[in-house]
Image 1: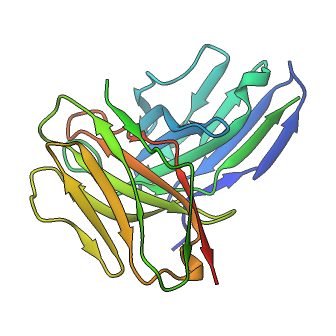
Image 2: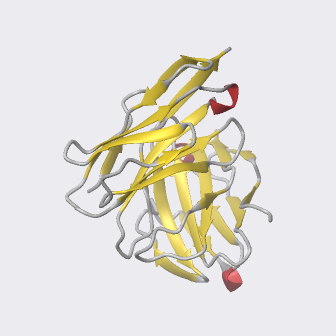
Length: 116
Length: 115
């Protein structure tokens, strides 16, 4: 069974440009999460989808970030316009269920975003 | 707000030896879950071990075990008989059993295993 995949693995863009990150969860996983790790710091939660609906987007830093999950399958995270502080590793994770039972979250390898 | 602290940015261990990675957390909840994740270089982050706060018994998975001290809010990971393949970033994480599913992570500990 394929795991969580993310594309691209690494992206280098200039400040002010737009970048779109993609995450393909494990097939059948309704729950999809985005996290971000800024250099040397903790991994921080960005948002959580249940199917195509945003369950919790309290971690999104500002309105330059837009996440979508059309059809409840893959998800995209767009940063527009990118700023220097957006650099970091963006992780996607998916899980079978959610709620009170802590279904295991399976992580993708991450996308390393560098904004110059 | 819940926070997770890993005070050791880097650790090293000799192959076949034992190493303990530290993690403390802050919460006002009585029921929650704690996790250790491992991220090898350029690879996916995988779950190593999980502990439910209501369980007094420390979780164990083969060479990996935890020392869960609920009163002290401490959750350390012990790796016995370290192997070269254990070299990775290790993240401690916390989550509550409530509606939110997001996890709170520490900053990570980079473990080096010396042959």
